[in-house]
Image (cartoon, rainbow, N blue to C red; front, side, top):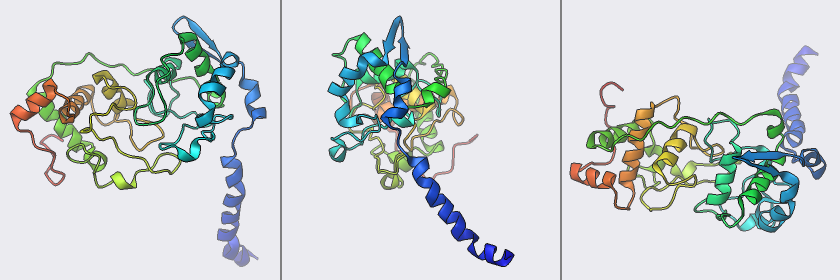
Length: 289
């Protein structure tokens, strides 16, 4: 009997996995969502109410994100990148540490800013109250908002002065944390790993091309770039570097990446003066690293 169980145990285990798979991947239903229809958001002195956003969500959002917020709206087959599945409670653009929920203000900012290079437009035409209500409605799709609180926003230190030394140091950070593997040695999104990248749903995803002049999805200011390095883009292969680099190094990386952009900038002018060459993946790491 023991020998028979050993023989069949791998098959029994596999059967158990397949049996559990539908339950683990099951989408929430309208019945599951209804108890959270009283969800609120708090942005400054504005309180958003989920129930007040139902009409706006149906008018502006349901075609992509779907009735149940699972990203399976009627436009889904034609969209790339695919709409966010709100039921997962995972968001790229946050001021909070990786793995944590964003703040209500983070979600409101995404609504107002839109997501460049996607079908998510700017909703800056909506009033602040409408956006606050929509934030509450987005939250009601995921049970994470019941059991968890948003993370504490990271602190962004004052931006230092741009210097040649900082830009050169930024290139060293780019090599140290191996940004080139996805973004390429010149920031053109052609690194050796670029073609293999997938999002948290297993769908292909593109690395950001710094040389195209496009706006990063989560904002285009220096502070926005710093925030991306230190929080990561959850749901994508872009990790948080908060445990790998110091705040000064994050600023150095910001300055180096600004030098790769096609727009005229102080960083680009300094890099040209220096004759700064792309990183060499085969070069030994700088001393002290």
